[in-house]
Structure formats: structure tokens, C-alpha cells
Image 1 (cartoon, rainbow, N blue to C red):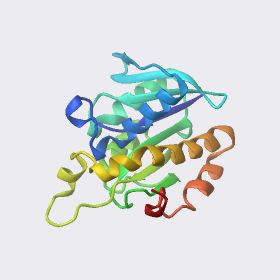
Image 2: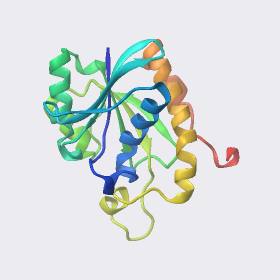
Image 3: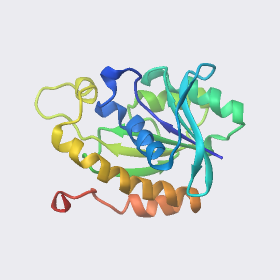
Length: 197
């Protein structure tokens, strides 16, 4: 079984923000594949167990807020006796433009507090990461305010198409391996392109 973990903040005020793109992508997968969510208090997470492309998965959204995401992740991983390499994390990435994504494994936190928390509580960086680009703010807007702001209307129009592409990468990861997912996702400079919209 794989643990697919989306990073974000709980609460309706954060739902459509850039920082919650990991939550939003898991909601997309759950909706597409008929996986229902429930709140699991012992893990402080929303979870959905099911099957994606013939593979057993547990979808999870920590409800501990971004900076403490590792608490929920470690509790779930320990319960199912999953090695960190069985964890796939989806999170926002300021250093990639919107529409870009990179799959990585074994990287440092790169200033992302949610990833830092995962490394601290799992005692490892050996998990797979889908780094979903949200771009950097223009002008004087601080990065913290930017990621906690909602996606722009033009971005929201593109999100579902981007998620369809990312799901292809997840399918390759589950049915084949991490390298296959990297070969697809990392070869794309940005998708969907502006021309394709």
C-alpha cells in the first residue's frame, strides 16, 4: 500500500489557497475514483482508503496545519508500518512557476515548513514528492501572504487540467515506479501550456 499525503491547512478559509494545492489534488483524485473521506481523530487527519489503478492506497490530509504535517504522517505510517519510501507527498512549490511540477525523492525541505515537519517526524527524507508549482509573488507581496491567498481566476481555470496531467504521473508511479513518474512529469517544462488553453 502507498500513503498519498496532501499538504495544506484545514478550514474553509484556506480551502482554495495556493498552500492547499496538495489537499485540492487529493480531493480531485478521490472524486475521480470514488474514494470517500472521513476524519480520523487518532491521526488528526482526513483519510480515504481505496484503489487507484488497481493499487491499494490511503489518501490523507493532515489536520494539524502545515507546519505540523509530520505528526499526522508519522502516526499513519507507524500504524500501517510503512517505510518513508512508501509515502508520496503533494505540496505547493514557490520555486516552480504555476503549471509546472517536478517529482523528486530524497531532497531537502527547501524552505517548505510542511516538508521540514515530515522529515523531522519521519526521521527520513526518502519519500517521493510531487512539487506543484504556484510561482512567486510579484511586487511587494510577501511569500507567506501569497501562498495563503486564493488562486487567481485564470489559475483556477487551469487547475483541473493540470491535475489530470499529474494523475498520469501518479498512475505511472503506482503501476510502475518513481522513475517512470519522473520521466513523464519532469520532462514537461509547464503543463498545461498557455497555448493549450
